[in-house]
Length: 516
Ligand SMILES: CC(=O)SCCNC(=O)CCNC(=O)[C@H](O)C(C)(C)COP(=O)(O)OP(=O)(O)OC[C@H]1O[C@@H](n2cnc3c(N)ncnc32)[C@H](O)[C@@H]1OP(=O)(O)O
Ligand SMILES: CC(C)C(=O)C(=O)O
Image 1: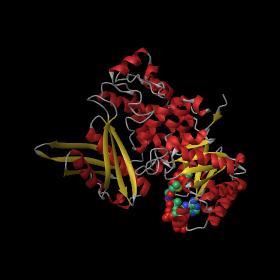
Image 2: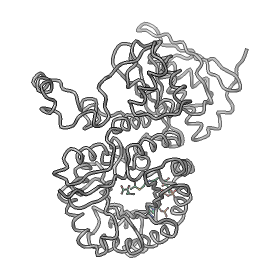
Image 3: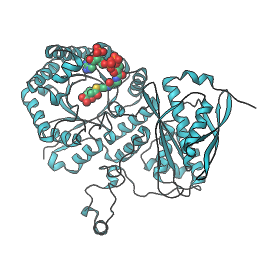
Image 4: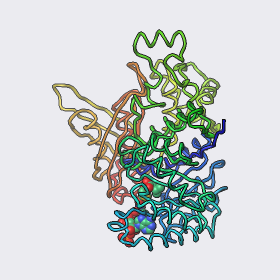
């Protein structure tokens, strides 16, 4: 069998971060990038360096610290964007500039206000400019699937002639169907005369739920690179889900005649990490990584699986690194046991980091009979997203009931002192949030709030996520505790700290510092 190797281009940190409500800080992005490197993705698109100083810094840090995959930075066709990407990627072992411009008439007329000839020239100039700095240049024709085919082929021919080493065919608005998209890939391969000098890539969005199917149709028609994101995150309805593409190719090699270089045993952990850090939960019935993906509810299925898992399982959970051995640590467990468990879960952490997690683990084990793998994953992710603490929640006291107005008192500390404030609210969480808002001394715009149990059982760890809005930016914060009010209050304070770190709220300096 002639098996082609398909390159996996992960864009969780760029298109994935375009998911409404998702903002990742540099430490979180680095943690995800390191996990992607363990997954052995071929290319990590680390961000869009010209978009903001924060994105520039995150791409620079990933370029300097992550080894293995190619590190890519996105840029419009302007030389300003390309230069920013070049600078951000300076320390990358294998940098790639990814430049793009739209080619559909709709985008040309209403967005770019450019003619077809102007766009073709911009594409060519951008690729030529990028090639002055790096050997690896990808060119994307945004909205390719709604572009005139022959014009699209002319643009790709020009981009390859200018030095593009990968040409990417995005279904930017998730418009095509698998048959159509497969035919488009075939058409481009047959009508771009210099196509053999470049890798053909695809980038599919999920507006009609066909991103994965379209990407796989492209593979069947000769695409050599697939762009995707962990858990299918991305603009609007998201991108093609990486785990689904990988496992489709892994499970049906005889059909696709293609394979990837991915270490599938890191898939589950990558999915959990991205879910926790992005604050976007994975739906239980999600293919491959959903909670129910390997669960068998009905008697006939259970009977079959007990006899032989092959009756109802086309993949083994172990293949994606899902260890069904859910337990087993508690308050009497020691550092070695935790370290061993972390290794089994795929974490390769510095001793200092393990020590920090061990302290948190012991605190948790004191409050919880059994500490499950998911609890440990949540503790690791909590550390990864820790921000400099402008405000610290020292303690809180909440009274609520069906005959009482909920009231909360909080004590908040900064390096300059502390303040205690009380507030009433529409329930205990609302009261706690209002008391914290009073304590920090500036208005907070709460956009969304979510609480869920990390594991089951009455002593389950609660994971709260809050989303705050400031100047059009949405910032999320997470808090963990067996007490859901405490988890919520921690998430709220964490999000405020993140907001200050990101937007530098001016009123923060005015906090009334109380004191004895
Ligand atoms: C399909 C995709 O996912 S593309 C990637 C989307 N990602 C992002 O947009 C990242 C976040 N974006 C940003 O931070 C900002 O939009 C920036 C920094 C990139 C640009 O900000 P601004 O300069 O304020 O421009 P704004 O976003 O309002 O408009 C986009 C401009 O880029 C132009 N443009 C859009 N795409 C391209 C392109 N590929 N090449 C060249 N110019 C382009 C538009 O025509 C418009 O130009 P104009 O200002 O002359 O009218
Ligand atoms: C920049 C390109 C690849 C993109 O994100 C899209 O077209 O969706």
